[in-house]
Image 1: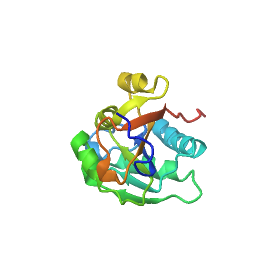
Image 2 (image 1 turned 180 degrees about the vertical axis):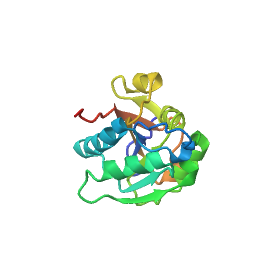
Image 3 (image 1 turned 90 degrees about the vertical axis):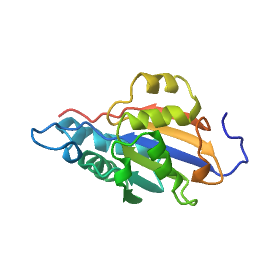
Length: 180
């Protein structure tokens, strides 16, 4: 059930899967960089967030190289990027760990950006969304590709109150950069 109006301020959780990564031989997973396509798609994700008026007050980002590069390229598309916190718990995290990190968000943050990995991000979106606009839930169930951006909206007194089924999935996009 979606939280009723008046139950607290409107909050948004913006979920961004890292852009397409490379698979260099001999490089451990945590250190894999973005692939050429990812280097184009990450700025496109930043532009899409700005155009959708979904810029965050705070960003939480996995410590993996590909996630950090996605954040850096996406946020470079904004005038003044918000603070970012790199958190090792977001790397290869499942829903319980992701929710734990999100629930630690300061109460003054109304829009939070989470930059991380699948399958955890896809599962988190599906767990939190009690409903979705148009066909957004079906699209997220089908696939949560690299550079995908999901926006969940809910009303609550603070981030610790965010619970399964309490958010509305208001948008789901997969920004892609231009080919040269």
